[in-house]
Image (cartoon, rainbow, N blue to C red; front, side, top):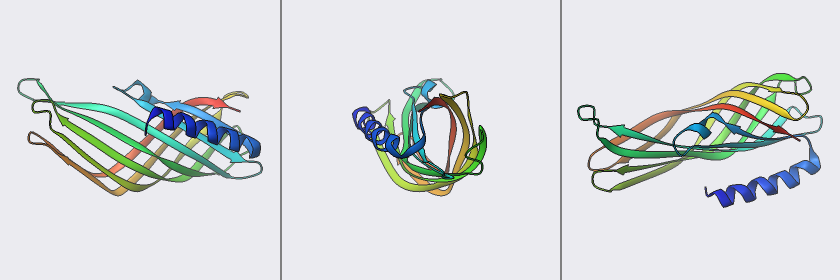
Length: 179
């Protein structure tokens, strides 16, 4: 997802949800510090509801080096983007545990740095999990969660490498603003 699309989605969601939400959140996560990392999540909870609805985008880049020479062989970029929903057990307290689910578009791009060959793959996968979220004063929060997708599979292949992922996880370690 392009940054412009993400910005428009955030602005649209913010405008609509602020009209109905008791709690609107916009946060950044730990993957922001990764190589070419992006980690953004927005969510809102309607008044008097245990349900929190949101949208997440996370992306990072990784490299694979030849174990004998240390020479960089491939560069892999992964992204997961999509809607999520959480059930908060105690929504009115400052901190609460939650269970949730998400449907992410999981994409992967692997490039051979030796040949320039590129392999791309994508799939849509359900993730389930949970975590803990807590407010930090009136206008801040943190979130710690883990979502799993044991059945998800994605594969990329170039002439010098291949990656086969079976199962996936989404670590959510975020801090953000509340409105």
